[in-house]
Length: 209
Image 1 (cartoon, rainbow, N blue to C red):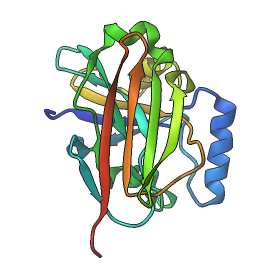
Image 2: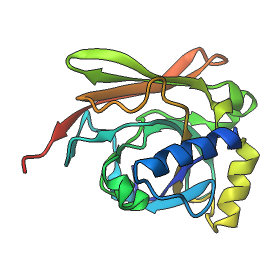
Image 3: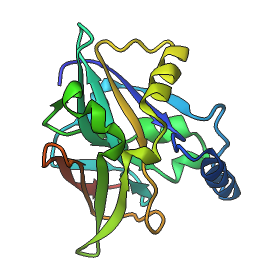
Image 4: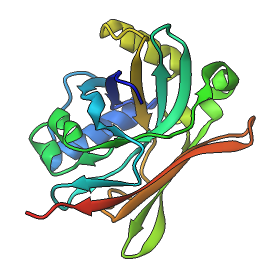
């Protein structure tokens, strides 16, 4: 993928009460409260990868399946899927740094935005984690669990993010059973209208210390 501005939207749950409950839970384990809800993280575009593996530092990193908006220089909009892989231990120091530390896998395939715009809320996000040699369900929910598309647009405009030559990870859906730190991650975005998915899969390798 050519150079683009990369952003991740955090704390993007549509149910604001649940989002704040989650924030309070994270505060108890040392994760600082975000300055705003949602919150925007501007990251290096060099983090994006379509490789089948990423390399990490530490024992507590995990992926998050996200719907991703991709725009070109003319503002043409496409949709794909990605994983906002994050160092959970470093989150207690800085959420921004914890995101910047890890590669951001992204789908090789894209859909034209207009082809899925009408079913945006009904698109399905799902993921699994490879733990001790076995794949286990990690996430499964519709995009309706994330803030509405119009709210995403307003949020980006408020933060001076132009929808040109950019990639925006729009937030994740809830975990089924809490964080799992595994050896692999896979997931996708499914369109009932198109009867197809965009998927990613990658192995997670720890660097020697």
